[in-house]
Figure 1 (cartoon, helix red, strand yellow):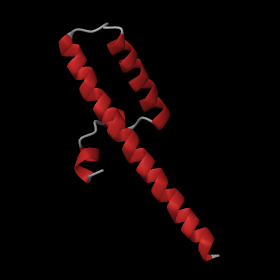
Figure 2 (figure 1 turned 90 degrees about the vertical axis):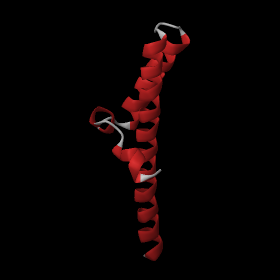
Figure 3 (figure 1 turned 90 degrees about the horizontal axis):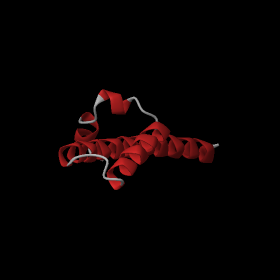
Figure 4 (figure 1 turned 180 degrees about the vertical axis):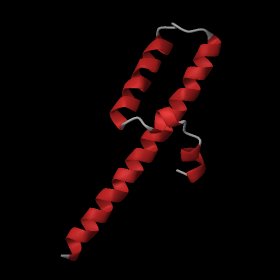
Length: 77
């Protein structure tokens, strides 16, 4: 993921954990699947889904890097 994508993530999304972001994604998907929103709202929900997914991607990559660093340290011992 590029640095640009992570900069475009709003603060309220950046502060979410993976679990919280996933729960919001599930809620939005349920709402969209049940057609509980109008087209304009659907577009906004879709944009938010993309930002939430980008945040999850950032968090997973960060965790992966942390784990990789730990593994390298362990292998050096």
